Image (cartoon, rainbow, N blue to C red; front, side, top):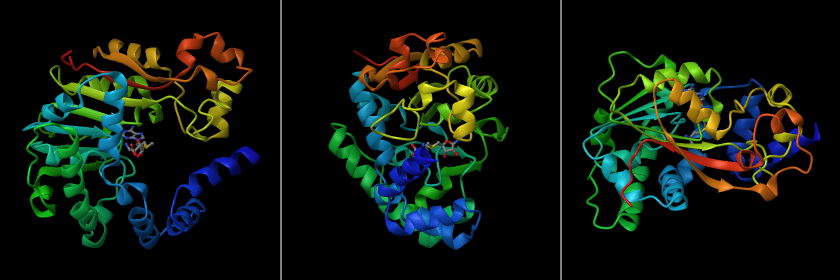
Length: 301
Ligand SMILES: C[S@@+](CC[C@H](N)C(=O)[O-])C[C@H]1O[C@@H](n2cnc3c(N)ncnc32)[C@H](O)[C@@H]1O
């Protein structure tokens, strides 16, 4: 009970008050379009529309790979994002980087909100120029695409649903990205097969967060202190519990070879007592990986 209150308090602390009220009411089952709109307008993504760009930038920096190379891969390409969230994640970044199309897939995507001029429209008005400015500051010599809300819309499509429920008439996808999504997918073997089947020549860049998703300062607390099925029961299946090499192996078995690059190893954050369920399955090094990239991009040295 106490740990649940701490986790909710931590989430609430980082949000503006209207968002806290909207989230709390929605959690109790009292949902409405007005509350969804408040949640959307006061979300971190709305306040900081370059959030996804910054996550990709920081991940590349930690991995020692060239962010500019990743961004340049988007030009004239169709980008698919798995778990794009309600704001369309990397969509503004992809468009100003010159992507031909962007497809976002997420069970939480809300079509009505996104096409609402006062919500999605307002978001695009700031998100596009802010992502362009982020790119100009961080990618030497880039010429960003001059795209506004009107010209963006025909290039963008969203699918409310999981990655396995994508439409079959989708255009050829050149690049698939995801940020902190793969760890939430439960039937992972099925999802991995569907991702691998997108096409043989599709390139992938996935950032995965292996923490407990509860407390930023204690990324493995509770998670490693009990068997995964108990953690899952307590936290309503918030994550699938797969670790980095296991995820890469499932992709490989599905026909997609991805390099696994640990970004952030936090051995000092491991709990003093780790349940045998974890130590019997994984090495200490693997347990200490907090975030990683799974990719088949052959970055230049
Ligand atoms: C932690 S959020 C991350 C959202 C966003 N990428 C970000 O970085 O803020 C995980 C997202 O994955 C989505 N998700 C969960 N299962 C999914 C699935 N099977 N296919 C696509 N998206 C999924 C959730 O709805 C949620 O929006």
